[in-house]
Image 1 (spheres, chains in turn red, orange, green, blue):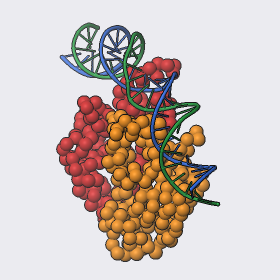
Image 2 (image 1 turned 30 degrees about the vertical axis):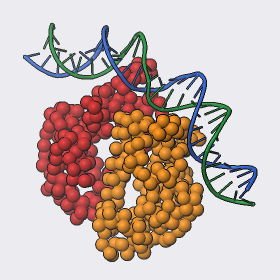
Image 3 (image 1 turned 90 degrees about the vertical axis):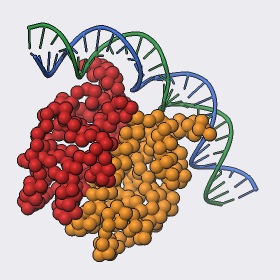
Image 4 (image 1 turned 180 degrees about the vertical axis):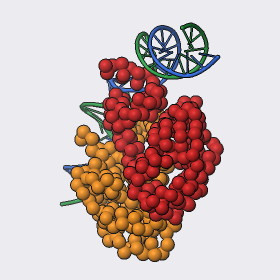
Length: 188
Length: 188
DNA sequence: GACAATTTTTGACATAGGTCAAATGTTGGG
DNA sequence: CCCAACATTTGACCTATGTCAAAAATTGTC
């Protein structure tokens, strides 16, 4: 869990005891590329810390997939609806590469939040950060052209940009595949 | 602080001791309509729990104001950049009505997060909720037409809809004032 | 290493919503 | 109660990006 613990510590410093409590709560698991970790309409009952590989979350609206986020090494993947509100997911999460992850039951994660103040604060801070990210991308959506948004995305997530295919990036940016392709063509 | 405590408890149950610790940390204050609680480029050093009245947060981009959120009774208002990253704010927050609020120094709020597990969890949960809200509005932005978004907004925030002026709502929805006005005209 | 499947590029055309500016309506302070 | 400041509506015209479909490039698999 090297990568995962590192990322947690970068968000909020945790003690060795907390680290151990986490380690005692997870199970290593592996998934092939294109595997659905979370499906809309079902309970998953666990969250995944990504040690290796990349995933994307997406909505399925009128048969169209809309990517809402990417998670790489160190990230945590779960169904918001289930973790926050104990409802079935409205979103899907699938692997974009082979993935090594650590599975933690949601119930255990919630118990850790309730009882371990370091993890409660870590949970607060990762949500703050994600909130800030979305907030910024909302602003970009309102003030930048499609091309400028793509540039900003490349800058902010160079890795994702290289590892994810165009269609996913396009829907994340809220533009069509054709438009994104044209933008790339025009740039060179 | 009735309204404020009620809203906190609705997000995460806190004990009477925690309630008291909060009460001991705040100062009541009042602001007239159109007062700027948070300004871009400066340190504010505190957060405000709104007891009465409404505020909006906005960005100023190329001389244009882009509203990113509204806060009513029970809400909490602060500079994300300052609370999360100890940087000056990039956003403004101004009152849209006369406001009664409770001021808490950011330093004290952070100390409470670090030392009080109930408040750490409350902090986690309000951020989860805001994150979910933004997530949903991001989806709406990508899948609904301007008119449908306005309908969804009216449904989700009927109060804000009545109390805030059109221009603020338009920029929140990411459409122009003229377009929103036309939509309203067409509807009847 | 060649074919099938998938991904990306390109083309022709359509449109939702933007822009700018003027007209009208509403509101609060003296 | 009236005027100035502010908020909303309306009009004429425009453009960034979408849609749909076909061609080209890339990738994975037997």
